[in-house]
Image 1 (cartoon, rainbow, N blue to C red):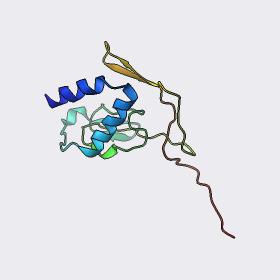
Image 2: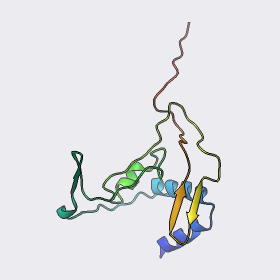
Image 3: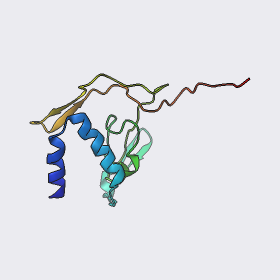
Image 4: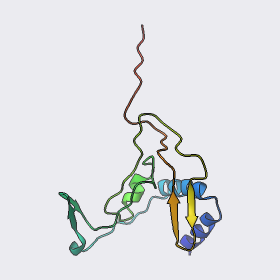
Amino acid sequence: MILKLARNALLLIEPETAHHLSILGLRIFSPRVNFVCPESLNQNIWGMDFLHPIGLAAGFDKDADAFNALSKLGFSFIEVGSVTPNPQPGNPRPRLFRLKEEEAIINRYGFNSKRGGLCRKKTYSS
């Protein structure tokens, strides 16, 4: 019942704000479950072993803020982050769209990133 109320409340909020609240909620209320899957679901793809074929694709946790909580939800793999040389804003809003009838979303964030990952400016003192 609580999950249904939370979902309905999030659907009343602008999609990108709801997304950020979801990430925050995962960070604060990290799930306390561990999933066990039957061995028949194990997958080996390109030399990598997966517990099952269901994972979380890129775009949900752009800054890897909720990685630990997401790993407890039972995904076999989680793709996080947008590696960019410097922090950048991504595409202009609106960039997240709900498809209510299909119960899906379209994510057009682009390569927004709070933290740059590859290049660091060196400063030298004289």
